[in-house]
Image (cartoon, rainbow, N blue to C red; front, side, top):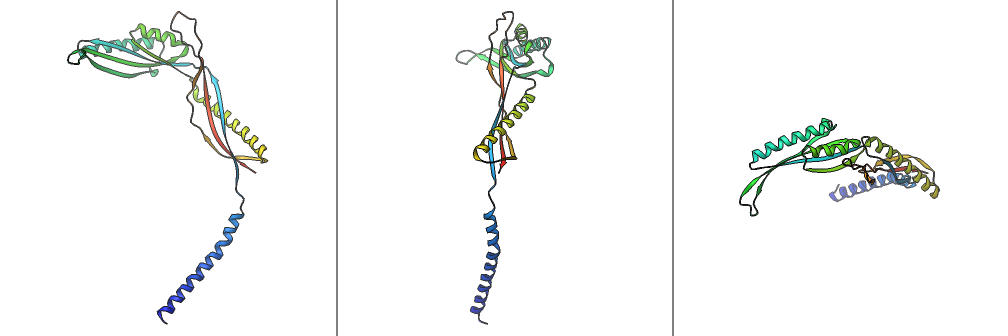
Length: 236
């Protein structure tokens, strides 16, 4: 048998195998093409709750000046301790007190060639019930706080309220999907997927002016807690 003849036989065998594979594959491709595409409806649902904040957070700073760094820091430690004691006496729990920053900086003349003294500061954050917020500010300033920042208002049960808003968002999504299905001549089926949107940070909606002049007024106003979900439904 010549070498050329062997090559012809090998090529023929390869062609037969390729034909067999094509014959097997073709029916499968035909069946796949006949399968109808899955119908779905995807919507975004929104839920929102209006609530009144019941917690307030502040930052209080005490600042001390002295001729030396050691003296400034030592005096500031005394002042900061007095501040923390006043905050605790005003009803702030130890778990709701946190030191945010301790700093010590030199003070120089205008051209920076001479150190004139040092400034030490200590910043403490405190969270309390909203009803105690005004007296808390007054107590902090009375204890020597030289800087006050806040309030940041929040709900103590914000997580539970957000879950309620999620339920409303799912209900809103179903209402939208049913409307789309009816308009499209489809029948809404089961839920295929649900994706939660990013939780929104509560945003103050309205703040009231206070007529109370006996102390620092803190009014809660209202906040919106929003939730978003994207839901895909089967349809037929």
